Length: 290
Image 1 (cartoon, rainbow, N blue to C red):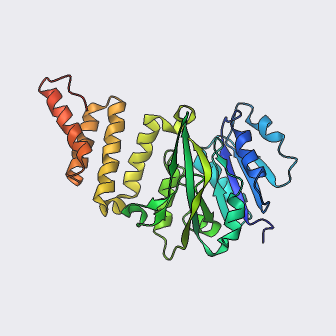
Image 2 (cartoon, rainbow, N blue to C red):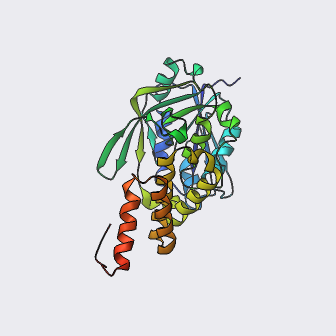
Image 3 (cartoon, one colour):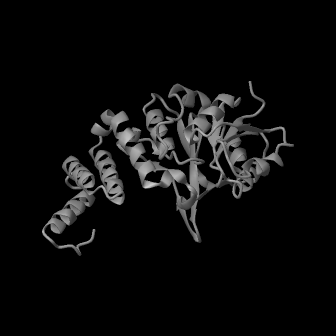
Protein backbone atom coordinates (compact mmCIF):
# COMPACT_ATOMS: atom_id res chain seq x y z
CA UNK A 1 0.00 0.00 0.00
CA UNK A 2 1.51 3.35 -1.03
CA UNK A 3 1.84 6.22 1.40
CA UNK A 4 0.80 8.51 -1.47
CA UNK A 5 -2.66 8.67 -3.03
CA UNK A 6 -1.39 9.88 -6.42
CA UNK A 7 1.60 9.12 -8.62
CA UNK A 8 2.27 11.86 -11.16
CA UNK A 9 4.31 10.83 -14.21
CA UNK A 10 6.21 13.33 -16.36
CA UNK A 11 7.79 11.93 -19.54
CA UNK A 12 10.38 14.33 -20.93
CA UNK A 13 12.76 14.67 -23.84
CA UNK A 14 14.99 17.72 -24.37
CA UNK A 15 12.85 20.05 -22.26
CA UNK A 16 15.58 21.82 -20.26
CA UNK A 17 13.88 25.18 -20.79
CA UNK A 18 10.40 24.07 -19.73
CA UNK A 19 10.53 21.23 -17.23
CA UNK A 20 11.20 23.26 -14.07
CA UNK A 21 7.80 24.92 -14.42
CA UNK A 22 6.07 21.53 -14.64
CA UNK A 23 7.91 20.17 -11.60
CA UNK A 24 7.24 23.29 -9.53
CA UNK A 25 3.52 23.03 -10.30
CA UNK A 26 3.54 19.69 -8.49
CA UNK A 27 5.80 20.71 -5.62
CA UNK A 28 3.51 23.70 -5.05
CA UNK A 29 0.35 21.62 -4.69
CA UNK A 30 -1.62 22.68 -1.61
CA UNK A 31 -1.53 19.13 -0.20
CA UNK A 32 1.34 16.67 -0.33
CA UNK A 33 -0.16 13.19 -0.78
CA UNK A 34 1.61 12.70 -4.13
CA UNK A 35 4.87 11.39 -5.51
CA UNK A 36 6.46 12.37 -8.81
CA UNK A 37 8.15 10.07 -11.32
CA UNK A 38 10.13 11.75 -14.11
CA UNK A 39 11.08 9.53 -17.04
CA UNK A 40 13.81 11.13 -19.14
CA UNK A 41 13.51 9.59 -22.60
CA UNK A 42 17.17 9.99 -23.57
CA UNK A 43 17.51 13.79 -23.47
CA UNK A 44 20.67 15.21 -25.03
CA UNK A 45 20.34 18.75 -23.66
CA UNK A 46 20.53 19.89 -20.00
CA UNK A 47 17.19 18.38 -18.98
CA UNK A 48 18.90 16.16 -16.40
CA UNK A 49 20.73 19.15 -14.91
CA UNK A 50 17.47 21.08 -14.52
CA UNK A 51 15.82 18.12 -12.81
CA UNK A 52 18.78 17.39 -10.54
CA UNK A 53 18.16 20.38 -8.28
CA UNK A 54 14.72 19.03 -7.35
CA UNK A 55 15.91 15.58 -6.30
CA UNK A 56 16.57 16.71 -2.72
CA UNK A 57 12.81 16.13 -2.38
CA UNK A 58 12.50 12.42 -1.63
CA UNK A 59 9.04 12.32 -3.22
CA UNK A 60 10.61 12.92 -6.63
CA UNK A 61 12.16 10.02 -8.57
CA UNK A 62 14.21 10.53 -11.74
CA UNK A 63 14.83 7.72 -14.24
CA UNK A 64 16.84 7.97 -17.47
CA UNK A 65 16.11 5.59 -20.36
CA UNK A 66 17.38 5.24 -23.91
CA UNK A 67 15.26 7.24 -26.35
CA UNK A 68 12.20 5.06 -26.98
CA UNK A 69 9.30 7.49 -27.41
CA UNK A 70 6.70 9.01 -25.12
CA UNK A 71 4.52 5.89 -24.93
CA UNK A 72 7.39 3.75 -23.68
CA UNK A 73 8.33 6.49 -21.21
CA UNK A 74 4.80 6.64 -19.80
CA UNK A 75 4.59 2.84 -19.61
CA UNK A 76 7.88 2.83 -17.70
CA UNK A 77 6.35 5.31 -15.27
CA UNK A 78 3.24 3.17 -14.81
CA UNK A 79 5.40 0.19 -13.81
CA UNK A 80 7.24 2.30 -11.23
CA UNK A 81 4.12 3.95 -9.79
CA UNK A 82 3.18 2.78 -6.30
CA UNK A 83 -0.10 4.69 -5.96
CA UNK A 84 -3.53 3.43 -6.93
CA UNK A 85 -4.22 6.53 -9.04
CA UNK A 86 -1.99 7.98 -11.78
CA UNK A 87 -1.89 11.35 -13.51
CA UNK A 88 0.30 12.19 -16.51
CA UNK A 89 1.72 15.67 -17.09
CA UNK A 90 3.62 16.79 -20.18
CA UNK A 91 6.89 18.51 -19.34
CA UNK A 92 5.90 21.83 -20.94
CA UNK A 93 2.56 22.10 -19.09
CA UNK A 94 1.62 22.80 -15.48
CA UNK A 95 -1.04 21.98 -12.89
CA UNK A 96 -2.83 24.55 -10.75
CA UNK A 97 -2.19 24.29 -6.98
CA UNK A 98 -5.45 22.72 -5.77
CA UNK A 99 -5.71 19.74 -8.13
CA UNK A 100 -4.54 17.08 -5.66
CA UNK A 101 -6.46 18.65 -2.78
CA UNK A 102 -9.73 18.64 -4.71
CA UNK A 103 -9.21 15.11 -5.98
CA UNK A 104 -8.72 14.00 -2.38
CA UNK A 105 -11.84 15.81 -1.15
CA UNK A 106 -13.78 14.15 -3.96
CA UNK A 107 -13.08 10.71 -2.51
CA UNK A 108 -11.18 9.74 -5.65
CA UNK A 109 -10.93 6.07 -4.70
CA UNK A 110 -14.52 5.53 -5.90
CA UNK A 111 -13.65 6.42 -9.52
CA UNK A 112 -11.79 4.82 -12.41
CA UNK A 113 -11.44 8.08 -14.35
CA UNK A 114 -11.66 11.66 -13.09
CA UNK A 115 -11.69 14.47 -15.68
CA UNK A 116 -11.29 18.25 -15.34
CA UNK A 117 -11.22 21.44 -17.39
CA UNK A 118 -8.16 22.82 -19.17
CA UNK A 119 -6.81 26.23 -20.07
CA UNK A 120 -5.16 25.95 -23.47
CA UNK A 121 -2.49 28.52 -24.35
CA UNK A 122 -1.11 29.27 -27.80
CA UNK A 123 1.16 32.29 -27.60
CA UNK A 124 -0.97 35.12 -26.21
CA UNK A 125 -4.23 33.33 -27.01
CA UNK A 126 -6.06 31.29 -24.38
CA UNK A 127 -9.20 29.18 -24.45
CA UNK A 128 -11.05 26.99 -21.96
CA UNK A 129 -11.61 23.36 -22.89
CA UNK A 130 -14.24 21.35 -21.05
CA UNK A 131 -14.77 17.58 -21.03
CA UNK A 132 -17.71 16.66 -23.26
CA UNK A 133 -19.67 13.70 -24.50
CA UNK A 134 -17.26 11.89 -26.81
CA UNK A 135 -17.88 10.15 -30.12
CA UNK A 136 -19.11 6.58 -30.53
CA UNK A 137 -15.52 5.39 -30.91
CA UNK A 138 -15.16 6.33 -27.23
CA UNK A 139 -18.36 4.52 -26.33
CA UNK A 140 -20.09 7.86 -25.81
CA UNK A 141 -18.54 8.55 -22.40
CA UNK A 142 -18.23 12.13 -21.13
CA UNK A 143 -14.62 13.08 -20.60
CA UNK A 144 -11.24 13.92 -22.14
CA UNK A 145 -8.04 12.01 -22.75
CA UNK A 146 -5.82 15.03 -23.27
CA UNK A 147 -2.59 14.49 -21.34
CA UNK A 148 -2.89 16.12 -17.92
CA UNK A 149 -6.68 16.35 -17.96
CA UNK A 150 -7.53 12.99 -16.39
CA UNK A 151 -6.68 10.89 -13.35
CA UNK A 152 -6.61 7.11 -13.99
CA UNK A 153 -7.03 4.24 -11.60
CA UNK A 154 -3.79 2.30 -12.11
CA UNK A 155 -5.48 -1.07 -12.63
CA UNK A 156 -7.43 0.46 -15.53
CA UNK A 157 -4.18 1.41 -17.28
CA UNK A 158 -2.77 -2.05 -16.63
CA UNK A 159 -5.91 -3.81 -17.86
CA UNK A 160 -5.60 -2.28 -21.35
CA UNK A 161 -1.83 -2.72 -21.54
CA UNK A 162 -0.92 0.96 -21.22
CA UNK A 163 0.12 3.10 -24.18
CA UNK A 164 0.75 1.60 -27.62
CA UNK A 165 4.36 2.46 -28.59
CA UNK A 166 3.47 2.10 -32.28
CA UNK A 167 1.52 5.36 -32.03
CA UNK A 168 3.51 8.56 -31.64
CA UNK A 169 0.69 11.03 -32.37
CA UNK A 170 -2.53 10.92 -30.36
CA UNK A 171 -1.32 7.99 -28.26
CA UNK A 172 -3.32 9.09 -25.22
CA UNK A 173 -6.53 9.24 -27.27
CA UNK A 174 -5.93 5.78 -28.72
CA UNK A 175 -5.49 4.36 -25.23
CA UNK A 176 -8.63 6.25 -24.24
CA UNK A 177 -10.57 4.38 -26.92
CA UNK A 178 -9.54 1.07 -25.39
CA UNK A 179 -10.35 2.23 -21.87
CA UNK A 180 -13.74 3.62 -22.89
CA UNK A 181 -14.87 0.15 -23.99
CA UNK A 182 -14.19 -1.43 -20.61
CA UNK A 183 -17.38 -2.44 -18.76
CA UNK A 184 -18.78 -0.57 -15.75
CA UNK A 185 -16.41 2.40 -15.78
CA UNK A 186 -16.97 4.83 -12.92
CA UNK A 187 -16.23 8.37 -14.09
CA UNK A 188 -16.78 11.94 -12.90
CA UNK A 189 -15.89 15.43 -14.15
CA UNK A 190 -14.70 18.26 -11.92
CA UNK A 191 -16.12 21.62 -13.11
CA UNK A 192 -12.87 23.52 -12.54
CA UNK A 193 -9.64 24.26 -14.42
CA UNK A 194 -6.57 22.43 -13.11
CA UNK A 195 -4.27 22.20 -16.15
CA UNK A 196 -2.51 24.84 -18.24
CA UNK A 197 -1.78 23.16 -21.56
CA UNK A 198 0.69 24.83 -23.90
CA UNK A 199 0.16 24.41 -27.62
CA UNK A 200 3.64 24.76 -29.05
CA UNK A 201 3.77 22.59 -32.13
CA UNK A 202 7.21 23.83 -33.07
CA UNK A 203 8.82 21.80 -30.29
CA UNK A 204 6.72 18.65 -30.60
CA UNK A 205 8.38 16.19 -33.02
CA UNK A 206 5.24 14.08 -33.21
CA UNK A 207 3.42 17.03 -34.80
CA UNK A 208 5.26 16.48 -38.11
CA UNK A 209 2.90 15.39 -40.94
CA UNK A 210 4.84 12.17 -41.55
CA UNK A 211 4.60 11.18 -37.86
CA UNK A 212 0.90 11.96 -37.78
CA UNK A 213 0.26 10.02 -40.98
CA UNK A 214 2.05 6.91 -39.76
CA UNK A 215 0.09 6.95 -36.50
CA UNK A 216 -3.30 7.53 -38.14
CA UNK A 217 -2.77 4.76 -40.68
CA UNK A 218 -1.90 2.39 -37.85
CA UNK A 219 -4.94 3.58 -35.89
CA UNK A 220 -7.22 2.89 -38.86
CA UNK A 221 -5.89 -0.65 -39.15
CA UNK A 222 -5.86 -1.44 -35.43
CA UNK A 223 -9.37 -0.20 -34.68
CA UNK A 224 -11.10 -1.00 -37.97
CA UNK A 225 -14.04 -2.63 -36.18
CA UNK A 226 -14.64 0.30 -33.82
CA UNK A 227 -14.46 2.81 -36.68
CA UNK A 228 -16.78 0.71 -38.84
CA UNK A 229 -19.50 1.33 -36.25
CA UNK A 230 -19.13 5.15 -36.33
CA UNK A 231 -19.35 6.50 -39.88
CA UNK A 232 -18.64 10.13 -38.94
CA UNK A 233 -15.47 9.38 -36.96
CA UNK A 234 -14.41 6.95 -39.69
CA UNK A 235 -14.91 9.61 -42.37
CA UNK A 236 -13.00 12.18 -40.31
CA UNK A 237 -10.07 9.80 -39.90
CA UNK A 238 -9.97 9.04 -43.62
CA UNK A 239 -10.11 12.78 -44.34
CA UNK A 240 -7.21 13.45 -41.94
CA UNK A 241 -5.13 10.76 -43.66
CA UNK A 242 -5.94 12.35 -47.02
CA UNK A 243 -5.06 15.81 -45.73
CA UNK A 244 -1.69 14.64 -44.39
CA UNK A 245 -0.90 12.92 -47.68
CA UNK A 246 -1.73 16.19 -49.40
CA UNK A 247 0.67 18.10 -47.13
CA UNK A 248 3.36 15.59 -48.03
CA UNK A 249 2.69 16.22 -51.76
CA UNK A 250 1.21 12.74 -52.25
CA UNK A 251 -1.73 14.07 -54.17
CA UNK A 252 -2.98 10.84 -55.74
CA UNK A 253 -3.07 9.10 -52.35
CA UNK A 254 -4.76 12.15 -50.84
CA UNK A 255 -7.46 12.15 -53.51
CA UNK A 256 -8.21 8.46 -52.92
CA UNK A 257 -8.62 8.98 -49.18
CA UNK A 258 -10.87 12.00 -49.73
CA UNK A 259 -13.07 9.80 -51.93
CA UNK A 260 -13.17 7.09 -49.26
CA UNK A 261 -14.09 9.68 -46.63
CA UNK A 262 -16.92 11.04 -48.77
CA UNK A 263 -18.23 7.55 -49.51
CA UNK A 264 -18.25 6.70 -45.82
CA UNK A 265 -20.20 9.84 -44.83
CA UNK A 266 -21.62 11.82 -47.81
CA UNK A 267 -22.98 14.60 -45.59
CA UNK A 268 -19.55 15.36 -44.11
CA UNK A 269 -18.66 18.18 -46.49
CA UNK A 270 -14.90 18.55 -46.04
CA UNK A 271 -14.00 15.57 -48.26
CA UNK A 272 -16.61 16.67 -50.82
CA UNK A 273 -14.94 20.08 -51.09
CA UNK A 274 -11.53 18.47 -51.50
CA UNK A 275 -12.84 16.17 -54.25
CA UNK A 276 -14.39 19.16 -55.99
CA UNK A 277 -11.09 21.02 -55.72
CA UNK A 278 -9.20 18.14 -57.34
CA UNK A 279 -11.77 17.74 -60.11
CA UNK A 280 -11.66 21.44 -60.94
CA UNK A 281 -7.87 21.35 -61.07
CA UNK A 282 -8.07 18.46 -63.54
CA UNK A 283 -10.24 20.69 -65.71
CA UNK A 284 -7.50 23.30 -65.69
CA UNK A 285 -8.93 25.68 -63.09
CA UNK A 286 -5.64 25.98 -61.21
CA UNK A 287 -6.59 28.89 -58.97
CA UNK A 288 -9.41 27.12 -57.20
CA UNK A 289 -8.52 26.80 -53.51
CA UNK A 290 -10.01 24.67 -50.75
